[in-house]
Length: 309
Image 1 (tube, rainbow, N blue to C red):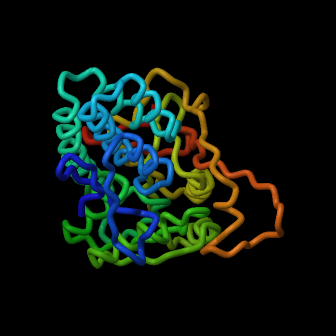
Image 2 (cartoon, rainbow, N blue to C red; image 1 turned 90 degrees about the horizontal axis):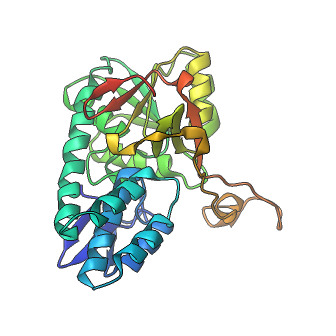
Image 3 (cartoon, rainbow, N blue to C red; image 1 turned 30 degrees about the vertical axis):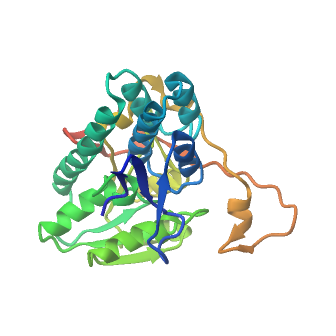
């Protein structure tokens, strides 16, 4: 399952806002349409955003646009995801933007397969693994990071169970991760966001594997709710792993200096199209939080498992 593909000088994207009910596609004809797709979360997940941004730059080049201007606009689409900045700069500094984007596309698949192989080493037969948000094929070009680890362990024949939390407010765990697991008949159960701590206390979860949107000195930035899961895992002595490519690392910055994206309050006010709070309710809606390195057991990369930085 390819989250995005290059077809006839257009970028083809799975419209993730329509899942799990509809598998439909959006075609981006220029870099501005790529920006809209990133902002509206038609494409999401740090690696997928990075590759989509690379193709956005390729589209800008094909259409004779000012590449520096396109780069600045694409980078502003979602400021927390380091892969987006890395991808745009890599294409901007290349001699052939489209060739570079296509290279990054293939690299992403190979990287995720390697992450899956290394990560499967920490998964034991009989494990029940909690994952938060969606760090699967839909968050990458294919296969996934955190879900790539789970896929790899399952394909090795290990008897595992997966628990996905819903991941409010946009429900990526419920809508996307559960859907991905079901496509491959990997045993999966859905829980509410507030249930993971209790299940850990009852020894019903014995590993956590999540993805990352940025890794920097001191910890990891990931989808809002990751910190809550990490704190519970630490309290109940459940190993907490992060799976991410090296392109997600920002070695020159402190994680605590990361700009955390604040999204529209209606994402919280409404659920399934229905308002769930009184009219006029004020909302705080950060898209990400920060997990300090002290709460992280290890980081699974394409080169192996390392300590948090």
